[in-house]
Length: 111
Image (cartoon, rainbow, N blue to C red; front, side, top):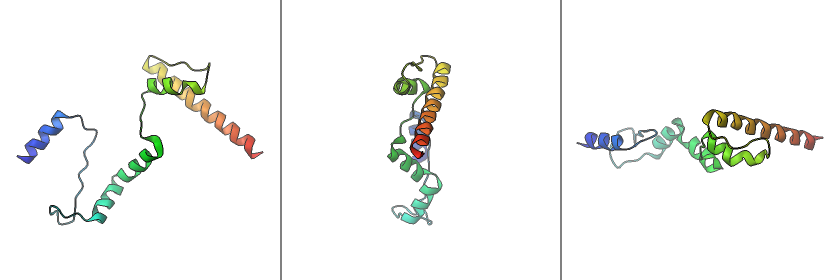
């Protein structure tokens, strides 16, 4: 009955992933061993994902969204692309040019 409900719920949604965490070594209900749970969260990369998300990198953009948002970094060089292939190329231009400008500025500051 519970499995059927779970399968129905998963079938009705679009989950990105499902992770099962054992609450304790005895697998008894309502008994959470914090160390066991934390070790599993670390092993699954959940803690790292939370850290990255908290650092401000929680948003994933499509290539089109990225070019539309960050084309302002290179005025005159990049315009937003409407097609996916063009947007992908423009994303690379934005990233490479920005990194190049950053490394040039860092080199100047070191002198």
